[in-house]
Length: 331
Image 1 (cartoon, rainbow, N blue to C red):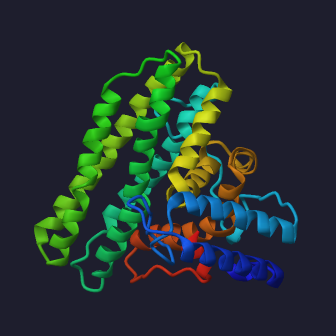
Image 2 (image 1 turned 90 degrees about the vertical axis):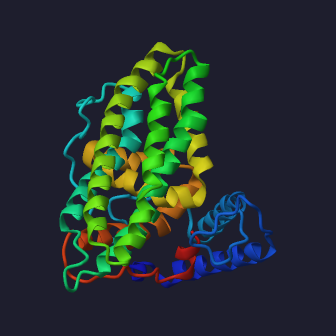
């Protein structure tokens, strides 16, 4: 995948990695430090964002400004336009409709894939024991974390902003979030039981996860009734909402965006089309986030999410690949 880059670009990114390492070595440990995927567990999330910005600026100084086409990066075959999968918003009318679909369509796409994975998940069949490790690792990294990030963003940033502008949201939204999080927390417990060859655990796990994704889909539909209505009845403007979304993107940090943003762009090709997906990448993402997405995260998404999903929907033994350049593990 990284062979697509020129040698000069590789050198620039190598220098950026050196910058990252130097700053990483100087950082100190904090309770808020995010350790997933880092070369050094002492680097804090605000430091990551600062360094990402500097790496992006360094690369731009060396190679010149670039607009990034989300449809061709990493030789990824992006999906065709099919329209929204929402039960509620079949034809988005305005920014109030479109805003809520941006994250929701990504989760509905993930749920469709998870249902197909569960249909093939049978780790006690000879030669399919690999499925347990690969599935639970993927769920923990690319699904459970994504749901946590999304609900945290709604509760801590999006909902308070709407309420401050006079919008009204049903209390059920928060109650549902608490219920969903409690169900997510049960998922890892099935792993140990399955690894201990407990036959009943497989059926219980599949039933639990299937019920969970169905429950979340119902929750998403209810939100797609509530949020556009609350936005339209409030004094919030499209510019106000964009400012809140920018806060959400920043609050998720590099790791949160790495986990969720590629799925959002992927699903956006389906529900909104290629032009809308490219506009979001080029016009609405902060420069350091766009830089990391287009240089590193799409490749990670291809290797460690899309390829994993495809493998889990089959039966051939599979192990996810590791990034081929060190900076991908950092960014």
